[in-house]
Image 1 (tube, each protein chain N blue to C red):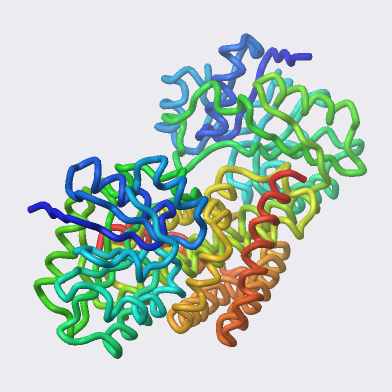
Image 2: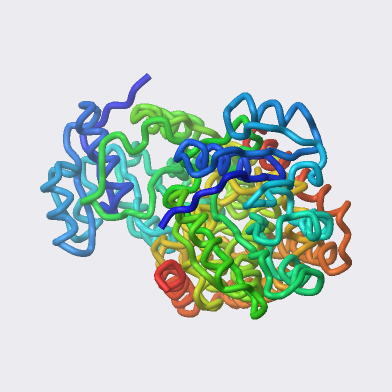
Length: 285
Length: 285
C-alpha cells in the first residue's frame, strides 16, 4: 500500500523534512508540498533543491487544504506547534512528527487534542551529522527504521496511515509505546551520545592525544559531532529515561573499576566476554 | 633509511606478529623469520601463509643468530619473556614488543636488563577485531602510527633502530615516554573500550533494543567485539591510568546528569558545543 496526498505541509525543512518532501514528490505521492520555516533563506534552499513547492514563514497560513502535516522541527518545539495547528488542520488531516523523543510529545497531544487522536508520533532513525535542506536526498528513508508510537487514544486508522506514509518512502516501521520508545532510545542513543561527548572531553583534556588516537576513538566519538541544540533538546525532552540510563551506566562502570582496582583478572575476562555477547544480543533481539 | 635483518625472531605469530613477518619478508628486509608460539597449529598457519620460515615452540631455541626479536604476545606475558630471553639474545640484537601498555613492561626491562637498554618498547596502533596469523597481511602497518617509548636508560642507537624497523614497514613513528603513553591510551582507547562494553550491556539489559539501534550505537560499541583476554590483560597492565580515566569520565557524566536533572538547557547546549570542539581539538593536537 502506498500513500497519496493532494497537499503536504512540512514544518521545518531541514535534512529530515527536506528529504521527506523530495521522496514524496519524486515518487509522485504528493501533488504539492508546502514548506514552513522561520528563515526564508532555508526555505529558499528547500524550494531550490525541489523539496517543497511553496514556502511559508507562518505555519497557520500553510494548513488550508492540507491532508498531511509533518512536524520536522526540534523536539522541544513540537508541543507548541501542536497547540498552534490543532484547530487549523482539516479534521481528516493526518499529523505526525519526526522528533527523537516521543513520550512528552504524545502525552501533550493526548491532553490537548480531540480523541481519537489523529496525531501519531513518528521517529525516523535516519540522518547523520549533516543537516539542512541542502543535504536532503530522496532516498534518506529507504531501508531505514521508523518508530511509530501510538497511544491508547490513537485513532487506529491514523496509526495505519502513519505507517503507510513511512513505508511509502521505503522505511521499515516498528510500532511501540512512547514510554518504551524513550527508554530504549535513551539507552541505545542518548546515553551513548552523552558518553561520546564526555570521551571527547577526556581525550582533549589529556594533551597530546592526537598521536595515540585510532579508529576506535574516531568511531566512538563520531556522534559527538552532532548539533548541540538538537542534543540539548533531546536531554530536555527525555530527562528521566536518560538520567536513569546514565545511572545504570555508572553502576556498570563502577563495577569494572572495582575489578581493575582489585586486579580481578577472571572477573575482567568474564566482563569483556559477556559484553561481547551482550552486543550481539542487543542487535539481535 | 630501511632496516635489514639476517634473522628475525617473532614471538607470538598472531595478526601483529604474522603481519610483521610478511611485511619484512615481502620487502626483502629479513633473510629468515623464525616464529615462536605455544600451539603448533598457529605456527603452521603462520608458516603456510608465508609469515615465518621456521617455527619453534620454545623461545630459547629460537634466539641463536637472531639480530631482531619482536615480542608479539599479550602484554601480560612480556615481562616474563624479557626475563627468559635476557641472557640468550645476542648482545647486539634489537629487542622490542608490540603490547598496548608500556609503563609496566619498560619499567621491568629497566629493572632487570643491562644498561643502556637494548630493549625498546613499541606499540603499533594497528589491528582490528580480527586476530590470528590467518588474518595477517603485509600492509597492516602501512600508514599506521607506531608509538615508540624509550626511557632515560635506553640506548639511543637502539631507539633509532626501533624507529627504523617500523618506518621500514610503512608506519609513522611517534616517540613518547611510557607513562605518558599509558595515560593517553587509557583515555583514548582503554576507557572508551570499557565504556563500549558497558553500553552494550546497558542496551542488552533494556530488552527489545534491536528496533531502535542505529549506526551510532553500532559505531560506538564495535570495539566491544574485541578479544576478552586482550582487554583483560590491558586492564591488568595499565590499572592506574585506566582507573584514573574512569574516575575523570564519571565526573564528566555526573556533571551532565546534574544538568539534565535540573533542566539546565543553557549548560547542556554549552556542554555539547564544547564536546564537539574538544573532539576536533583532540584529533588535531
